[in-house]
Each structure stands twice: as structure tokens, then as C-alpha cells.
Length: 252
Length: 199
Image 1 (cartoon, rainbow over the protein chains, first blue to last red):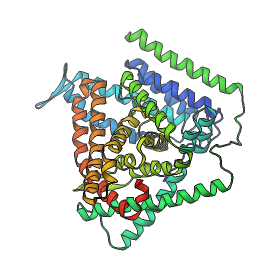
Image 2 (cartoon, each protein chain N blue to C red; image 1 turned 60 degrees about the vertical axis):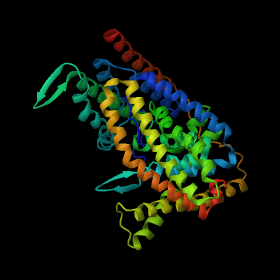
Image 3 (cartoon, chains in turn red, brown; image 1 turned 180 degrees about the horizontal axis):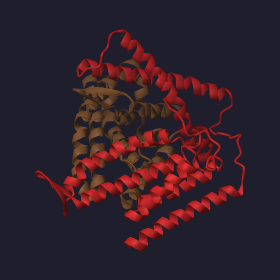
Image 4 (cartoon, chains in turn orange, blue; image 1 turned 45 degrees about the vertical axis):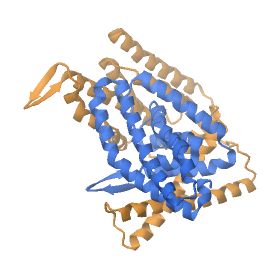
């Protein structure tokens, strides 16, 4: 269910210290999120595209992820041009297409894609366990990191339990319909998943205690320090400043 | 329901993030280390729920389960939902870094309110009161999520009014389904393992 198609690689970005990548991604995303102007937005889409390129990712897989995001954006295209009133751009029959609506929908599209591409290039390129340790070494609370890592582990447990129960329901001839019986079945299934998964979680936790778990995670992997990391961070700060400057110069 | 990247304006994103972080911080503070595995289970269930599709007439909707998560976790619903949403952002690009805060807020705040309002009724001995509270809790949390989402969209940009009304309308069937599922699920847990509900 959970795949990390981008986590493995040997590109320039893959070799940057994950902490530097996470901070750069955060900074850059925040800057893009506050943009309005078209030139800076287009510049950010180009920069994010270049980041994807630098990470040497499989274009098809990236497009698949982007398709999902653009599904939500599509709702805006279906509604905004007709509801955000202003100058009329076109008239089709009784429907008016308004300029502010189209402008807004276009802004939303560019922004979403720029932020998501940057996220894929910088954050999806690390494996989950690396991210857990990164959060740890960035000083996030221990409890948070513990919860984060355990949740990831339990997703697979829940998925197994879900599939197991689903199979047995199917064998008994269940077919989903809009009936109370069907909703009851789903509800009992979810309840059963909770019961089984929490019993299992309890066993796992006791086993961890037996092995001396004290609420802390210790990481064995050290992030090698290298001038490349700083180079990357400075570059991302520079690029963020550049699009921000563009925003202020053109659009005040 | 998530708000994607690039839609909201920065004041909305910033204030949403501030509230979500405050809730998460309090939740973490109140969370005991030995309770983390249970919280993680519910957080993982919340994550998986978004992949379980339930039929509604000719169409289908995925479950949200924030009502149940809230009832079972209380304050810890904030960190649990925050973590589940981070994972969804990471693996599916639902939501993302800048919208993590607002998405946490719009899912976790109703969950927490659901805990405050309905938990005391659910732990009562009377089975039908508990079921009614379960239904109300499930429906209420989805409804409130929809309201918060619509409000955030309108705060960000008044032109989003049409979109936000459509989002809200889409929440109504989900709300009813979620109410029914939460009701039966609470009834089930009360019979099978009341300790999960803290009774």
C-alpha cells in the first residue's frame, strides 16, 4: 500500500543531508504559498521542475502523483470561472466566464503544482526511517517522533487486519450496497480492527519494554557533514529570495 | 477531506498552523509514553480509513473517522491526526507541508469537541443513549469539519464561496454515513471491549 518510489537514488539531491532538505523544502514551500503574481509563480514552477530533474526522478511516477493533486484543483476550474464575478471573458449560452475566476484558478493550479513538485523532489526522496531520524535530530519532541514512527509501523498492521477481515466478509458473500446492513458490517469491521490492532499494539509495546525501551529512539545512522549541504541550503534560500523579490517588484 | 497546497492565503495558513500546533503541543504534553502505542494505532486507522470506500447510492465516499478517533483519544486526537496527515502528505501528496496545520485543525478540532460533548454520554450504561451519542458524534465531527473547511476557503478568498458551498454540500451524505458507522462502531466496542472506550 505504501510505496516510496522516489526514496532510492544517487542524485545530487539524494546525497544532501535530509535535515537540510527538509528545512529547504519548508522554507521554499512557505515562500511559494504566499505568492500571487504570475511571473513569480511561473518561476517557482520552473524551479520545482528543475529540482525534480536534479533528483533524477521517474517522470511518469511524478506525473501520477501530480494528477491526484490536480483532481482537487479541477473542482476550482469547474466552479471559479463561473462564480468569481468581474470582467466577462467569454459567454457560452447563458454562462459567463469571468476573468477573476480564471485568474484565481490559474494561480491555484500553478501554486499547487510548484509546492507539490518541490515536496516530491526534496522530501519524498528520503525513506521514512530517515525522515523519522531527521525529525529527531531537528529537535522535535521525543514523544512526537515515537508516535510518528509507530504510526507508520501500525499502518501495515491495520492494513493486514483490514485485509484479513475483508477476505472473510467476502467469503461469506458480502457485497457493498447502500443498506443499513452494509454500514453495520463496515462499522463492526472497523471496531474489530481497533480491537485486534490494539491487542497487537499492546503485545508489541510489552515486547519493546522487555528489550529495554525507555521512550527514546537512538539512531545509528550519522549524517555526513559536507559543504554540499550548505551549498544546497544557500541555493534554496537564494531561489526563495529571488521569487519573493520578483513578487514584490512586480506586484508590490 | 483535505485542502490542497496552494489554495489558501498566508494569513489563513499561518493562523491555522498556529492553532493546530498549539493543540498538538497540549495533546503531546498530556499523552503518556505508555499510551503512545494506542494513539499510534488510532492514528494509523485514521490514515487507512481514507482508503476504505463505502457505497452511497451509485457513488462512494471514503470514511473520515475523526469522530471515533476523537472519542477514543481526547486531546491526543491532535497529535494523532497531525501525524496521520503528515504521512498522507508524504505518501500520497494529499495536503502538504504548508497546509498541514489547517488540515490538522479542520479534522482534529471537531474530533476533540466530539470528545468533550459526547464522550460523557457514550460511557453511560444506557445503551440507546450511547448509540445516539455515537451517531451525533460521528455526524457532528464531519459536519464541523465541512463548516471549518468552507470557512477557511471563504476567509482566504471571498470568490471561493461557490466552491466552499459545494464542498459543504458534498459533506452532507458523508455526514450521515459517518454517523451511522460511528454509532454501530461505538455499540460494537461497548459490547466487545469497553476498556477501549475507557469505561
